Image (cartoon, rainbow, N blue to C red; front, side, top):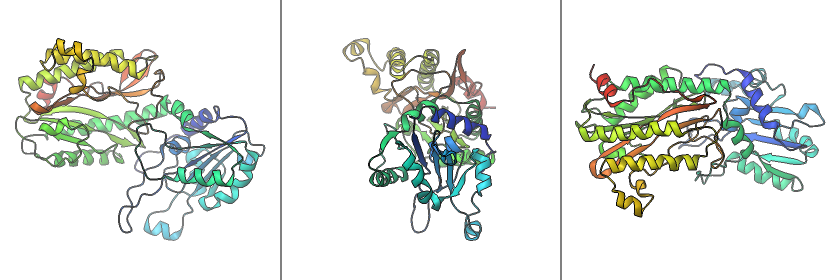
Length: 426
């Protein structure tokens, strides 16, 4: 991996938080993600299961973590199964972790080879009353491919039908939402790399540049700073493409007079940054572009003041939408008469949420209707999209909720329209 080694203490703390919420006499199983076939004999770049990484720090395929904190036999309380390396693997793909290396990274003493799992785990299952299954419970997931953990769940329920079964996802969501200091440091590094990428663009963007050239500048900066690449497919949308929320083709030329919407983030040690800014392609906002930009900035600042521990995301978003409605009226996009008839009139120009949790996943795990807590990391990203004018503006920062208020990871990054113009025209 490109990133610096993460302190083992993080994963030890994370396991203690999870096991503290397990039912007595229960065992939990966590699988790595599959290697995803591409075409022929090729695979997509491997991406570790976020829950497994959170609990173990192991960042390679064919890994299983077993947690059985109150097992009568202490040998089964923490076990790690990893891919057995070989001379052939070392020659073709690079050696995988040896047991002592996996133990040093995770803090788990009992490490076995992956193929030893079934014969080793049987005795542990027989001592357990409940088996925790780790499944993807993201309420926005539309994946139709049965992942490793789903296949295992079907198999294990067939083999052990008399056991009780429980869900690890609600526990892990609660654990992962509140970041440890080590995680905050990793997110800060991901944001710093993201920041460097944006700053690189300020003097690069100009009329005639292609969107994919901008994407190339970003990946260059990310890679040279130990990033594993983009946290998500970058959105480099100029002109009307900025009004397409998930525009990722990045295949158009940036034209004089257009706005450019940039939504991207760097991944570092599996943690993510997420930034959105808008640049005038020629270095100067038109009066209308600046008016829309400043309206979004006003909403962004209002949202930052509203985002507090104890608040719930739905009520917070509603409060932000009230501010947004005022700005849309000021811009002449809505009338008060129309707003009185339709309380969701704002959705014509602002159709997405204001904030989402951020961490090991860009849209990180959360309890959507639970109260926000100290230690949560979220985005703030209001936007206004006017397809008929070819204007799309979104402004996004990443923030940490603290007892004293918000800590903005992106403080100091250019955000005022005047700042952006000045830096684009040195």
